[in-house]
Length: 132
Ligand SMILES: [Zn+2]
Ligand SMILES: [Zn+2]
Ligand SMILES: [Zn+2]
Ligand SMILES: [Zn+2]
Image: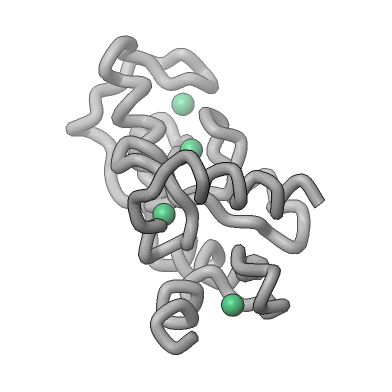
């Protein structure tokens, strides 16, 4: 699987510790990376990174993006990527608990598939690493 190769390459090139939340190597400006078992519903997909939302943020025009994706996008632009309506980061609000709960329930595969075949809700991954 490509997935395993990727982890090995990252391990060799970057000696820094893996992210405690998602178990992957990434910078603070990048979202956590998860391997979902199922295709994620379009309503729960960020239309900037095209992955399931991480820390969702609602725009006044009714669209939702990952906080990091939208923050990075609005460094250079001042419109919503979907409908191009004028928006400011300050006018965007965190998504409702309902949306967060749906995202938390998405099933992800433990990235340490060499030793672990666990499939678990996204919100349980961080605890799973601690109890490994
Ligand atoms: Zn992470
Ligand atoms: Zn995103
Ligand atoms: Zn919009
Ligand atoms: Zn595991």
